[in-house]
Amino acid sequence: MTRIFLAGYGGVGRAFHDLVVAEAASLRSKPQVVAIARRAGVRSDPEGIAPGAFDDAAPAADTALQFAKDGAYDVLVELTPTDLDTGGAALDHVRAALARGKHVVTANKGPVVVAYRELMDLARANGAQFRFEGTVAGAVPVLNTHDRCLTGNPVTRVDGILNGTSNFILTRMMDEGLDFDAALEEAQALGYAEADPTNDVDGYDAAAKIVILANHVLGLDIGMKDVACTGIRSVSAGAIRLARTQGYAIRLIGSVDAETGRARVAPRLVPRTSSLNVTGPLNVVRYRTKHAGPLTFVGRGAGGMETATAVLSDLASLD
Amino acid sequence: MTRIFLAGYGGVGRAFHDLVVAEAASLRSKPQVVAIARRAGVRSDPEGIAPGAFDDAAPAADTALQFAKDGAYDVLVELTPTDLDTGGAALDHVRAALARGKHVVTANKGPVVVAYRELMDLARANGAQFRFEGTVAGAVPVLNTHDRCLTGNPVTRVDGILNGTSNFILTRMMDEGLDFDAALEEAQALGYAEADPTNDVDGYDAAAKIVILANHVLGLDIGMKDVACTGIRSVSAGAIRLARTQGYAIRLIGSVDAETGRARVAPRLVPRTSSLNVTGPLNVVRYRTKHAGPLTFVGRGAGGMETATAVLSDLASLD
Image (cartoon, rainbow over all chains, first blue to last red):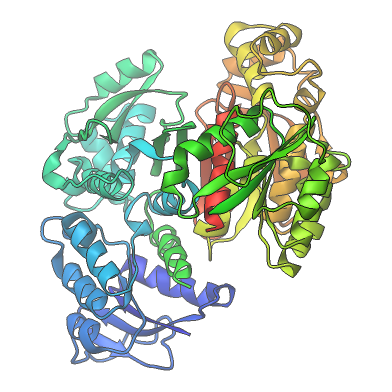
């Protein structure tokens, strides 16, 4: 049995808990959630915790960091809120777990963006694994496909639509002729965009994913400050209409090239029939490979259950 | 060092030989081609064979089957011509290698279509691995992504464009208004179609790939006779024109559904902006997953070097 410490119990955390229970039988390691950290504190039960069991429980004394440091578990699943500037509390949790030789699986971009090399080194030094498929493109297994299915065919460039919220907004602007503000309001009403949409519409979320792809897939060593980042606030309904009449869509594209080292996120014209032109909340990642041209991966880039499948596949790979 | 017996030395075989030499340093197992079977016979050299070294050599005495049975090698790379009816000589080579506990990597659909379960069982019984990423969608790692990156998120249906030749023909008919015969002639002149185009344009090649996906990814147990197969000979320029005016393309789509067990290959209408609508010689595979909706993979579905990258990634996974 693999004992899981689940830190963070929002949409992804709850979906992961449901999923791991539903699919436990299909996994060799028979994973079981034995501790859950929420804002109120950590509750643990070595016999395993059922989904919903702790919803009404009184606050516990332990903090997530304390449990990461001395609790009894095999794998930390880190799903607390993202902080792209400092890595947030998640960075401390990950450090504490890896330092003890515990594996870490996360969908939290913060620690990966802020401290990729430090954490990979720390994992290696302690015989642990650090996996983060869920940080990029939700359910689409772009990192693990690179790691496990493309040996001998190096990836030399990455382009992609990595933020479903801004892609939803651009799609609605294109399909319905809405201007940016109206499309953003609709996205907020539908739950695709947050009250403060900065990370999504100004391109920072996409830039964070480009940083992860650059460092992990291309072997570069860059941070957020190295990504030239333009969001979609200034994309006008008129520009989208004009592009459409010429057979193009306007999409927020993230790119990074191994040869030039140049990384950017910006609105770009994409032929409507291109496989890079995906609609609505979908994500797409296109790898340019050394020996076999482009490989393109498309799927749902966000959502609790979608991201949870990426976390579970990472967990399964630790078997 | 991993000693490779390369059976078959056509376009894919030669590309694989070039690739394995170019990328050997990046592979843990340091693979080396120590024997090559061509029509004229087998030449071997335990020190390793350089690309082109045997091009003008006199015929050798051994047959591929003889060497598979008693030659000194670790992995059989089976790239002889495909026979979808009987499995051809390749089936005997694969059986002989697996029975000795040698790993087998192939891009030859014949043995996999004709004897999937027998060969998987034989491999297991002898502690060997049988890998065949290169049989489906060329460079696109659809089988290994399923095997290694989607644990806990079962695939329940597969749809795809699995034959680049017929997709090239349909694309030319759509873009240039050509009729089928003219587009076929062009494809033959460009080397995309063979003199006898039956396997490609009548859908048998796509059907073979559907059989492999059905058995390996969906866990079904079907053969060629179970695929309802219609090719593209009867697709008219007029039908394509009409579809286009409505925002659709006509594509040769292969499908198989785990729940119904129904498998088919047939021309179908696809929205032009769908990620299933890929153009030219590209292939696309779309997995419907249980927990995260559709995942779509696009890339070059044929070509010597493209297929060789799939073979090499299988080889690397044996490390």
